Length: 447
Image 1 (spheres, one colour):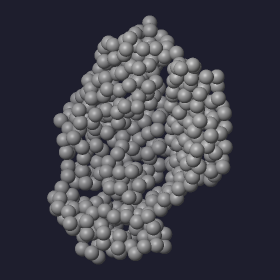
Image 2 (cartoon, helix red, strand yellow):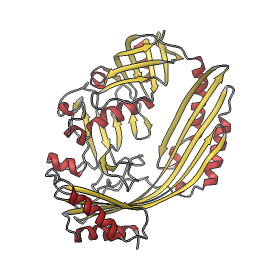
Image 3 (cartoon, one colour):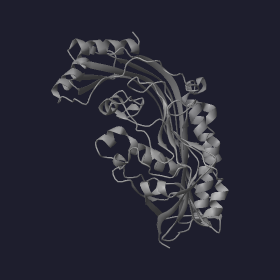
Image 4 (cartoon, rainbow, N blue to C red):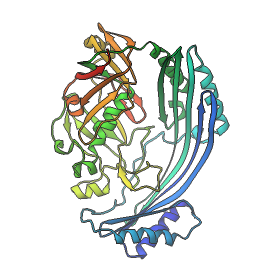
């Protein structure tokens, strides 16, 4: 009996116990993880995770259970979920689980080259990349590579059935440079569905080169100025700041700063942000979400106006709209153990008509910000973040790296203060965005 049949049997078992609805989400994922630390292999392991999460619903109350072994009595797993559902409080906001529908067929989601990778090949790749990064003043090189091949299965009591398979490959490189007592670090990384979409050597060499450049970093000054936001920092601002605030559950509970802004103009006309679960080869592209709703493309912010939210079946039913196919599990789409939540798919920021060089010349005196490890406050929209990778712009030219400098702005002010959007997009994990020029940003530094 394959995993799909186990899912069907679990759903049947819960229905026999008198619940109103149920669904089962199965995952069969094999991951190889290699970690290299300071030039030596630290971890090399294969993780094979197989299991099913069952959700039972009784009068709107949801009960969860799961099994990571298929050699157990499935009726016991079903009973745990049903018992939890019947012990909970009725929830009139729950309306229904997804109904059967035709699934889209996006391409380039499975790569036989990733699927056939061995631990030995990934160890060799890690070691080779580390050697290439051994430049003058490079002190340490840490690299993590993961390859995954997976199948996901969804079955529910309304007759939904879905099976999907895919691959992932991720690489992260953290390089530290040292010159006497002066140290500087830089990170580069990405994740793809197709092996040829990733250039590991380019990423590692860039991390090493930026770490070395950072040894000459300078403080900036405390002022309000214009900044250009690019590369990794936009994942923080766009994905974790703007798009995450459009999670329908947070909005409905009043826990997002976007709650009073729905159907309201919040930004410049040039700002359009799209949630797209159907990009060929997209990191978070799927045929369906973890509830079995087809993935789709829809605008979240269009010409500066908040147009849409990210929904799963519960929040959609509560609002009287259709789910947007953004249901996930608390640990991601390959998590059968966690509860159903909401997350974005691939995020696209529509391009403008400025080149990066034109933006730099326009700023004259400011900053080019490339990365931060800090995240926005979704309740308030405030962002106060240390610049971990950025450069000073002087007289319209990018000069030295910047260090020990913070930038702060409320995201609602940020979208109003956009002065230019680039005409060339770059991919970083699930974000496709051009650089963005923003004015009147508070910057604080020791100098």
